[in-house]
Amino acid sequence: MDEQPAPQRRTAGDRGTGDGTGRALDRRAELSEFLRSRRARLKPEDVGLRDFGRHRRVPGLRREELAQLAGVSVAYYTRLEQGNGQNVSSEVLGAIASALRLTDAEQAHLTHLARPGQHKRKQSPRQQRVRGTLRGLLDTMDGVPAYVVGRRSEILAWNRMAAAVFGDWSQVPPQERNWARLVFLNPEYRDLFVEWDQKASDIVSYLRMDAGCHPEDPRLSALVGELSVKSEEFRRLWARHDVREKSHGVKRLRHPLVGELSLSFETFALPDDAEQSVVAYHAEPGSTSAEALRLLASWGTDATRAGTAVPSRE
Image (cartoon, rainbow, N blue to C red; front, side, top):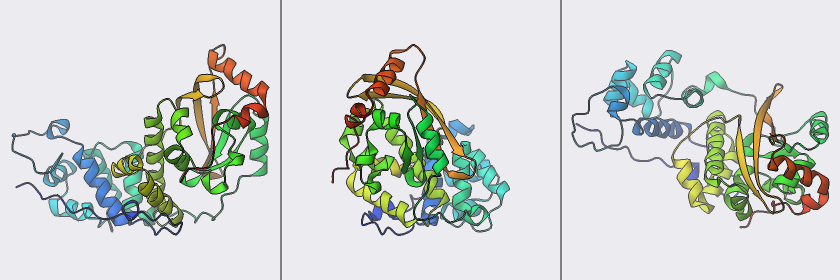
């Protein structure tokens, strides 16, 4: 007999705590919903099981099918999917991750949720700080848009070229300098990113990874709550429980002064602070995008003033 779909627990996103005093995310609920969402995306034929055509009352694999693939009892897996991850071994988590076809990022997220005591990190200070020497390095990267991003997708520091390309963040209140808030609450950024849907999906995936590592963070919970209240698209993406890491790629932008840009980017985590990363962009030499960057660099502050970043509209 097919299992009955379990009632959905309310997470911080469901509660919508947008007052800046968000409560911590419910780690057990996050674990439960993540496992259910990964199981729901698999079909029997995806994992070599026969589907006898019976009507399935839940999407994807049944719990007993997943337990069979992972080599654990149905009762054991059911307890784990209900959020009871105490004393689960690395071997069992690995077997379940393999059965669910998890990526490396998804497996790391599962481990953080199921065994938080094994991956406790030093509590982050309320205000993230960027070393002065790192700020100096950004300033020397002439012609290269670069910025430092930290926890909760917060934009911590940037150089003149980043301001020319993405907008003058110095004119944005500090609490608004956050990629998630800019992408979901600021219409100008919807115009800036040609593949806005992909950018939005990436941002939510990063926040999900952050939530797995720091479910107790009330500021992250408040951000998720606020975005869930103000953006239907954020609510939809958050409910998917997708997690991934993207350290390099290409971004296509629609700049108000120089038109469309195609920029490759690389992300470098700081060796002394894994919660901060430098993101640097460059254009193919000789391309129209490279010429556009050269023009933006030559315009200096005029290009910066014409940037896209303005305070989020409530």
